[in-house]
Length: 379
Image 1 (cartoon, rainbow, N blue to C red):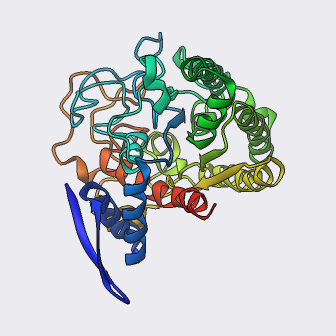
Image 2: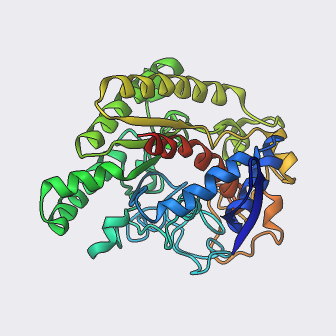
């Protein structure tokens, strides 16, 4: 379904935007108490009509459980959710997505004009990979050891190895390296990773020594240095349009509050540590754009929503997850009935946002990604 609107200037013109995008933009306005200018709707309508022809013909996704859509289902790990109540609001039911409905990558793919969800690497086959692959894995991190206490996971290093295999397959499909390089250079690459390097590494000293080895500032430096090498590896595989997400307010999630919130809305020490990472990530993105030929990196701050912003959206429950959670994993207990009005909850379990929160995050990410699209029009 489409929503029509008019812009009046030298003449009156009529444009159309998908209704689901309009709805998400209105949610975004409510959450952040901002008014999105009408010209943004105009740009989005132009972008929607142009996308099918030439812009972002493919979408590659890297990250953790915030965007995992089934890669962990066959792994031996506690970090998998191929059971109800996960997926209770998703058309196909439980698929391995760590939420009640769609995750941010699903919603962003719709905004970008893809008519189907980007397949997980575990299920991607044939010519489907020409449109993109989702490599995300629950409990994965920038550091390879991150999340190991939960079992197997596909770390960012392993995700990049999987992408190398995808690049080889695309080269075979298109017939030669030149065609593959041209195709891959037009794709959008989307990263949502780093949270587990804190939640499932630095802040659980009973499993990892990192908090005794590094100060928060030192740890952020080490993480960003490793991330830099990983992003350069992707660049060497032909990626040019790369969006990297900053980390959200990890000190405000139920899992962290349960450990040491003491009744406060957020744990400031955790948020302060994450801020150090985000600031260093901004510097990294500037350096990569400066030093890598044709590189177009952008940073996305879509995951950072403070409690006051959530209340303005209509979310009432910030500390309480929607589902009944396991005391050991913080994930939903299989088969238990979740809360009835899921739109009132920021979190579905102790770690992961609800579908409505993913819509807001995806909308914010999409508005940032417009920078890459506008650059293509200018060029």
